[in-house]
Length: 182
Image 1 (cartoon, rainbow, N blue to C red):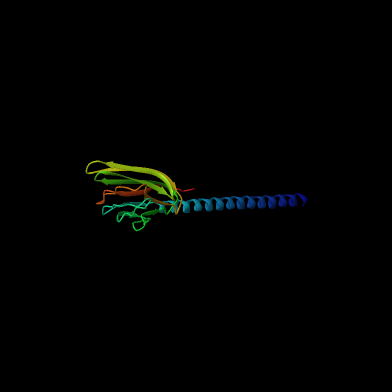
Image 2 (image 1 turned 120 degrees about the vertical axis):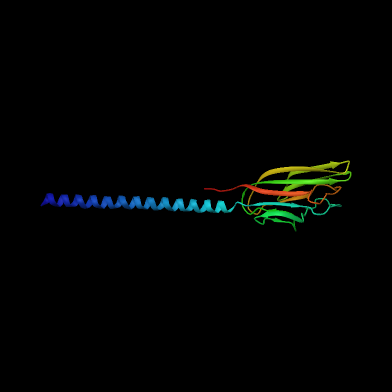
């Protein structure tokens, strides 16, 4: 009878250990599923962050620009993500990530004009155009990391001759890559 009791105890112990092992495996699997679900949700959020791009232009010529005036581009041609305001001339980043911005200025008559691409009040890139004839254009681009809610705009650098409108002076930007911490 003692042998039977020992065998019974060993069987119960083995059964308990087996159940504990299954529970640990199930808990581990549940944790892995939870982590994968969290990564999938982050990836879905990242995919939703695509589609940020704009192009805007000056419809009319601008003369008598004031020092450090923010340019307002009244002809918004593209505004994917609705992050650019033609009223204020400001792009507001909807998501953190890497962006590219381009500005082309049209300078007319005999004179010069220069503007800056500005992020949150910090100058990123200068564009200078000069002509002694009818008109010329000058272009600059910048690639920059933005946090959500950062602002980018074009600011007049000096007392300038003016800018040609008719969509020759443009401001464009787009997201290259969102920040996606998976």
